[in-house]
Image (cartoon, helix red, strand yellow):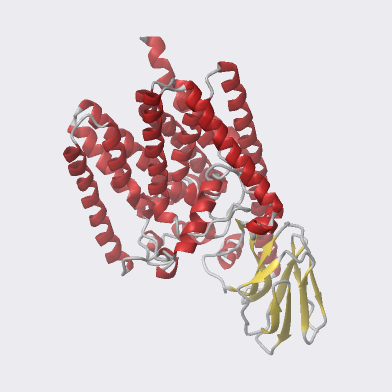
Length: 527
């Protein structure tokens, strides 16, 4: 008995330790973008952001409460905030193991397959944004409570104890208070219940309706706080259900739920795939792989086995799509980490699918072990490279906020080119003024006026400025794109392009004008 119980005791700790090792590169990384806005308010006792009253209208009180707890423990030290994220991810990986163990057991598969699924989730190369970015914690918390709710629901179905059902519903409520994407849970339970419940479908529908009542209560409460039903990024984003948009988002989500960011050079032929021989080659290889898998399964499995497998595959695919539905309208990139946090919950079921297919198609233990090692090694290497990029972005954020705070006058500062992101990693998409205030150790300061944001390909990319009336601003790397260009009281925009700006200085109050070049802040010499 002792031997059978010991894995349950040690596995959570092993997953937490593995998470710490996988993301150790960024445990001491600095804050980024939204971190300065949200955590800054919490540090100064302003909790309005929890109720959706500011910063985008997101009603996520449990998410902000986690910041309150961290700030009491760690102050403004980023290590503690990162540690919380990584521990949540390790816990989620263990919950994936538990979920896989419960869902795969009726299929006669071993616990090793569940460990494989959890390892895939732990090292998934599309999880850096959710884990490394402190502001990605909402997805970590929501997923934690969604998985807990699912497991408690299964415990209720197995043991018919209402306490488990009540606890599952409480976890659902907490998941909703962490992030709105948890709205998918009642439908996940419906699919899982219809597939694996020993009771009649009527009972499953009745239980699911109880979760839906909780969902309606949350929607009403949230609408009361934020003053509207949609909130967030607005109706143009959340309610965009045009077929072309949904098709593209679905294809991107499927690819990124399995693969790391694709090489940027692939955008050349994926943009117009039907005109590219490379695309046809990839399509042929993919089709041949699917055909080979079908033939192998047909040879090794009986018709009855294939029927059960197809049913379970449909269940996992359905749960993946339902988990994806609340975020399918949100921006995602095939080539960068941008938006990949939206895939955190759907990737749970993608990991289960990969592990299940590997177990079905490959029966030889040595071959299975080799396949697992290849996939896990590939995921780990890709995750390391992505985490390295996040550390570079954090170092850039720290350098800019410190140098600008030291050089800029207290009254006002103008920034010609604030880095929006570093190859998709947010640097100062928001929060530059708050970051400068942090570095000055003051609660409030005059906002930094920004002429243009810039998408950087490298932290060391240079910006070339020439002339005086007007000023000619050019990115040395043409791929560094200027976005969100606006005039300021001291600089008006005469002309703008993706890689250049033409600016005119205007009479204004004494101020400092700064620009970013080579990873450092430089003050512009007034003529």
